[in-house]
Structure formats: structure tokens, C-alpha cells
Length: 488
Image (cartoon, rainbow, N blue to C red):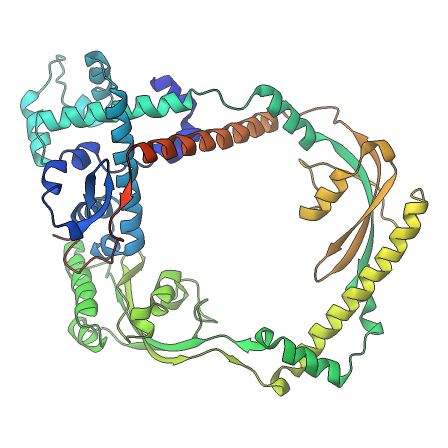
């Protein structure tokens, strides 16, 4: 069983990463959840609810594991991810129960002996320190029965996941066909028709420019932006870590509790209030990468309803180790279309570019019509080069697809591909060959990709079946946590 897990480790990584919350902590508390207020039920699996309290508790535990603060545990995206994990666990738990999977005693012993904390409890003479074992469990709020039940459940989950992993995936023949398609080489020549070479032939009238501006006002819109103020709490290298942690908690709590101003927090912790003008949704321009307002999470918070519409402080954001930031919006400037006079030069550039591009494409189409009658004509083409999907050179996207779709039975042949914003390119294909040598590593990587896609599809179908079987029902939407919920 464990060999299978190791063999399919890459395929199953996305599955096994779900189990970040110990199973005994999820399934050992179902008895009391049935008595909770129905308003706290988020989703039901086989008639048993996952409650908001369970999500909050699991979010707090996981945030502590990754070194996060209470604000992370309270954030809606983080709690939604935790809910998804709990739901996945419950569905798999239902499947384990429905299939009546069993774990042998020796299999459980072997699994326990692989846990470093358990191995450390064996004395030099080989005997097991049962007293320390019970102390370890007690310190984690468990007894032996809960621990063994949780480990047994995890092994059953592994059995279930492995049964999907052992399902026959894509055939080797399919992998060979795909690899062959990617290795096939074609000799090509190119003939470019660039818009920039036709700009001199373009002279738009004043009426054309004005009409383009009127019809494409969105292209000349100045995006919304804000002026903000912010405070930064930085750890002092000479300061005791415990003292700084207390400050960080105070920083987070005060900016949240007194959300109508940064001044109380700044005064209390002796921080200076700084300002920054012209902050767009992309951040502040002309600042360094480590600037607080270059941080995506800080900017995202500033453009949230709480900060933008309600004028409240943002949550305290840790932008780097030992650095916390909170900010607030001073002034909001909505998006507006700039007057024609201010953007006249840009209007002319865009109109001229588009007109030149049309001329380039027209010229390419005319030349293509001639070449289709005489594809052996190589006048103006570049020197021949060999390309393949494994070694595309400068070919990407539509160009590669067009070149590779040409039948090998009618060579030489020519195709034309338009390049938006640039012009058009004619490709001449005159030979097809298989490479003299193949890269075994590339072959193996492609086969693994095919297997991974097949495994993902297989697992998605597997989970869909058991989700339906378990009668999953959404009761209430997951809401933003209250200030004290994650820490309760």
C-alpha cells in the first residue's frame, strides 16, 4: 500500500494535501454538533452538519500551524479553504464507512512506528515508554482511544485513495502517440508583413480620429485611484520576540476595534502616520517592491468595501517577517474618461497602428494567393529552420497549430497567420521528419503528464460519485468570522 503511495506521489499530492487537519479532530465531535443551532450549520454530509464553530476551530489550528495570526484565521478565503477540506474529509469518511473498510492490527502498528514522535518514545532497550505516550496525547487533548481511531481512519482513507491511484490510467500506446506528435519536426521558412513597415502610408483625418475616440472611450479612461494613509509596525532586532508579539497583537486589535482612525494605534505604539497619493488597484507607482503599498494584500484590502465605502482601517497585514501594516482610504477618485485634447497623440497612434496592420494583412493575403499557386517560390523568405512542438523556436500558439496542421502529403505548402497588433506572417513548410534521437526524459515527463491528467479526471469522478451518495447539502453560506470566533 505504501509503495503505491510513493509511486503515485506526484499524482496524489493534491489529494493528500487535503489532510492537514487530523481526522480524529474532525470526526470525534459529531455527537455534539447535532445539538447546535441550525443557523450555525454550513453544510450537511449524510445528514450530519459541518458547523461554523468547527470551521472556526479548524481555521485557528491551521493558522497556528503555519505561523499565522488571528486575522488570517478569520479571513473568509482562508476559512473557505478550511471548509473545503472539512467537506472533503467528511465525504471520504462517508465512503470509508459505506465500503466498510478495515485496517489490520499489524498495519496500524507499522503505520504508528513511522511517526517520529512515536519512534522517539522507544527506549534504548526496545521497550515503549507508555507513560510519556499518554502525556503526549494529553498535551494534545486526546486519549488513546481517540488517537488510535484517528490513525485507523487515516489508513482507511489511504486505502481508498490508493484504490483510485491503482486504477489503470492512460495506455502506454497513447503516450507514445502523443510523444511522437510532439517530436515530429518540420522545416519552415517565414515571410513577415509587419504593420510598422506600413505606417508611412497611413494619414488619418481629424474626423477619423474623433470618431475613434468617441467609439472607444474606455480605451482612454483614467482608472480609479485613492489617496491613503498608513502605519507600519516593525520588529526591533534588539527587542524581545515575546514583547514584539504582544505589540503585534495590540496593533492588530486596536486597528480593528478602533477602525475609524489610525491615530489611536499610532499614538499608543509611537508610530508615524504616513501618506501615499494615487494608489490604483495595481498598487502605488514609483515605490520599491518592499513598500507597504506595493503589497497586493494591502492594496486589495484598501479596495474592499470596508475600507473604500465604510472608510475603515484595513486589517493588520504582515507583509514580511516582523513587519505589519494597516492603512485607510483618505480620498477616492472614480475612473473618468480623459478629454480628447489630453489623449490626442495616443488616439492618433492607435488609429494609425490599426490602419497599418490592416494594410499589412491585406498585403500578406495577396502574396499568399500567389504562393498557393506556386509554393516553390522562396523569394523573400527567411533561411530554413527545423521546429517541433518540443522545440518550437519562435513559434507559439496559433502559429504552431497552423504549421503543424498542414498535411505532410502536400508539401511544399504555405499558410498565413495574423498576429494581432503586429501584422501577419506567411509560413512555408517543405519537409517533415522524425528526429534521429529521442530524449527519454522528455518521453517520461510527457507520459507522467498524461497519467496525471487521467488521475485527476478519475479522482474528480470518484469524489463526485461519493458527494452525491453522501447527499451533500449546503445549508448556509460561510460568513466572515466575528472578531472573537477564531480565537475562542
